[in-house]
Length: 449
Ligand SMILES: *[C@@H]1O[C@H](CO)[C@@H](O)[C@H](O)[C@H]1NC(C)=O
Ligand SMILES: *[C@@H]1O[C@H](CO)[C@@H](O)[C@H](O)[C@H]1NC(C)=O
Ligand SMILES: *[C@@H]1O[C@H](CO)[C@@H](O)[C@H](O)[C@H]1NC(C)=O
Image 1 (spheres, rainbow, N blue to C red):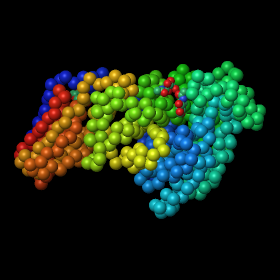
Image 2 (image 1 turned 120 degrees about the horizontal axis):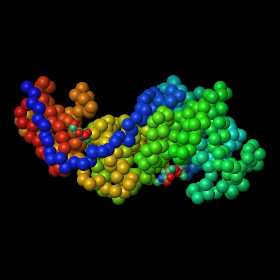
Image 3 (image 1 turned 180 degrees about the horizontal axis):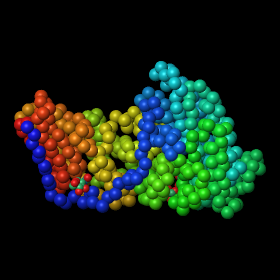
């Protein structure tokens, strides 16, 4: 016998109103590289969703972080650096030793696919200088390219469209002066030109990418480009950028830039998630709590996920690649492929709730109220199984077993739907949906089924 119970609370909830999903229209084709979730780029190359930023680490930590990242449950196959970081030798050592150990430990015969994103420094803008930079980077990585354990893929981005003295770490004249003579002779100083050197760099990347001589170049893209520069680039390119890197603030705020990516099937890689969102979250306590509470729902009965993991899960589930950087082994494993895979999927309701919370943290304007309500299901008359629906009835996830006389407490988003089964007869069940709520906790005595 089935009963249908609807809990309809008062309609004070404004949370969902008017919110458009940030990721609507963003192409999401997903692939797998062995057991590592990946996005599929517009050129059909598979690109890992979870990476590790190593370019800004202290150089003596780089090798070990890569070594640890590659191993077992961490399953990290994407590393992000830049030409200016100058840690290529450490990266090479880390990739070589890490893949060797991983293959031995897991008894794997196939080559291990490893991806590297690197970015051409502003001093190497212009056709000849960019070509020179790419070729010398490929030369530097020849020990990995030749390693029979490794299927090495490299992605080249233009780091910045131009040198700007006011940007941290840039000093146009000094940077030019300090270049080796052989680089200076290759092409003219980009900062003295009309600011269009990046267009010539793009032409160089296109030529190298399209040439049969450089099969290791898997894709090309840009970083730190404004929407105006993206439009110019899209207008003149023969090969459209496969990848764009931006900080999390741009992802949330710069909707025109994100729209261009959607329109041209450009894959987005975000950085600064921890710095710009997670570490600032305490300034907006209700938004922070809203993120933290989602952890309960995703943790599958294990320790609740931390807010950083939830936001990373949210991004990767929506097809965005992430490259958090850390030199801490615990954080490395918390933000790894294995740890994020252990969390259950974010429901479409929670997806909207999370977006609102992240926007609130980003803007420093707290949410009006907590979007969640705590519900407890009390098994008054017999043992029950509690399931949560995802998108439809066929897609249920197990939440809890509750013995007679006990209750399960869970955090619930508006419109979350639950099904409670008699533990001994799955034909007997009841459905509950929390339509809207007034912020109060709810207690449900399930009764007889
Ligand atoms: C994010 O990137 C944009 C574009 O490069 C930049 O203007 C902005 O200042 C960055 N945001 C932060 C918080 O660093
Ligand atoms: C440019 O991008 C890099 C990462 O790609 C980032 O570390 C840097 O802060 C960005 N610079 C600006 C000016 O946005
Ligand atoms: C909940 O359902 C109602 C009615 O179908 C809908 O208007 C509302 O947008 C939904 N809320 C969420 C969070 O999906």
